[in-house]
Structure formats: structure tokens, C-alpha cells
Length: 158
Image (cartoon, rainbow, N blue to C red):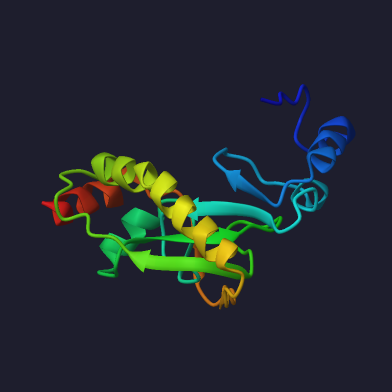
């Protein structure tokens, strides 16, 4: 196990990552990475996003999807320095949340699938002939949903 004693973009941290000669990083933190950190991995850093890209970028995408009557799902893609703008999507699929009784429960369920989706994404990469879907930026960037709208979404889930 390796511990980085500074920020991910700190030169010592980046140097440590480069020396490890890693192929892929898995994102599970609430940070925006800098190019120097992303470039420390041969292929890049994967993100497990609880929204369908490119349509739903940013925050509260589960809620916005439900409010607009669109499918809910998960996208695994290689990040860049933007917010859900990385151009290479490995997989993106709808996920059934009909058994969830609240927004919180639905989010917890989708976030709990990170291991499943990361494993599938890494398997696709190991096959070596993966054709990436394009995250072309055609979707909107969403922000944190207000409590009023979240209440409406809660009612839609029931």
C-alpha cells in the first residue's frame, strides 16, 4: 500500500505515481484532477458517474434525470480536468432503481455499484480492442438541485 503525503498534484505525489508505472487509476474522491496527475497513469483515470453521459453532467444528475422522465444509469469514462467532460466513455447503461424509495436510497444504490462497473470497465480494457463511445459535450451541465425540486423527485419515485 502506498500513501501519498501531499495533494495528488504535488510533484512528490505525481513522481510516486509515475514510478509505480500504473495503467489505470480509479476515481472515488470529490476532487478535480490536474493533467499532471491524470498523465501519471498510462491510460488515465476512470470515473464511475451516476448519470448517463453525455446527457447528464455535473451534480444531482440522478434527480434531474428522474424529474425530466429520462433513464437513470451509470457511465464509466476516462476523466479529464473538466466536470464529466472526459471524451472516452467505456460503458454507459441504464440501471433500474424502481425498488428504491428515496433519492438517498437510489444514490446509495448507484454508488454501491462502483465495484461492479469498474470491474466490467477494466475487463473491457484488458480485452484490448475496446471502441470508446464519444462524450461529445452535447449534454447539459447540471448543478445541485434545490430542496423544492428534490421533494418533487421524491414524489415521482413513489
